[in-house]
Image (cartoon, rainbow, N blue to C red; front, side, top):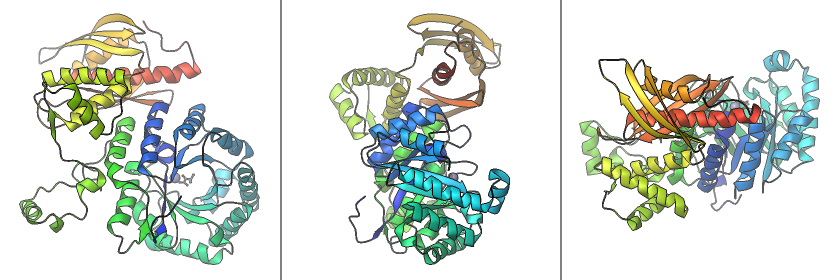
Length: 518
Ligand code: KIV
Ligand code: ZN
């Protein structure tokens, strides 16, 4: 990790795939995690926490596969204090160029008494043994006292000192329950740096949850107190109210370098792309007025603001949309555009498709241009993302006819390709979406519960493509599917089928006979 400027470097530690994924319903497939990891690495994130290897085989595989593809960032795996946890994390990280083991153990009175049912002395011993064990696997070890902000100070100092002595190179102080406030967190980091005798041997880190809406403010206060690593997630994804939002941390430091004189390595022009990707794969929409990446973050509606903006953008704009990678909506091309222009547009949008995928995308673009008068950048992005998301599906939507309207009952006739075979079924339902999903259910036997059905428009206008997200839940496991089409019912069918494909993969890993085709 090199520091090219004179300013202190603040390491950006992304935990979207670990703490972010702990958010109920925000599960990502292995392929989606690899996509996210690729973007984070390219964007210049310093450390990527890819999962909690002992938690499940899926998490282990994710950490292991992410380790293989990440080129620059440190790849981190989380572990509790036990030896099995730590060894499993080390095993998952064995392909990483720069592996880090992150071990944690609760230190607050309430967690020790009720959650761990351990005495403070036992916790203290476990801190030493866990960090020592982790150091046996790698030189890069992070230790976290869970619920650190509600831990008694003397005990916290004692544990932090022991962790550093045992070899921890990063000490992370989690505000696990989002309870602290900026001034208090500033004092806590200051106190630790002053009182712990070997504090200069480790980097202090922040990890703030957003229960009181102060995660970003708290993290930045800690940086001002000397912390040099911030743990955060794209879009602030995370349990309950989420974690500190990466894009807000980075843009605050970049925009207010006068009061936050630190260097961060993140390429801010990739923030919008990362935000869209995480929102798409998790089906967690970004609120319209979310700082930095919300749809309205750079929109000026009121007459006075618009007038000021026209005279000089600095009147109401503290950062430019371009600086976060937001491009002006541009008209791409129409049905007469050729292969060359389409290839150039894909490159401009950051896609690097192989020849077969390119030919497929070009054909889809032509089909879209036949249906839709204006094709925008967002349409191309949605089209290619849709194609990539469904590339490995065993079940594909072939045709759909829906009869809807006031008369009822609504009816859907659906043809699916299932493992190369075409199957057609008809079903009625309480509305066209219900009829469509019932027709799919008649072909793919399953008991998954629909948790979320969400429609948004890719662009403006009544001929816009619909983007549909579907979340299904079965046996406590959730999967998310997406589909895009100019026809909302077709997009819905694609999203539902996409979720079923993922469910099938998940179930096959545990019960190979599951999800029979009827
Ligand atoms: O919030 C928390 O305490 C955590 C730890 C595991 C670092 O996520
Ligand atoms: Zn957390």
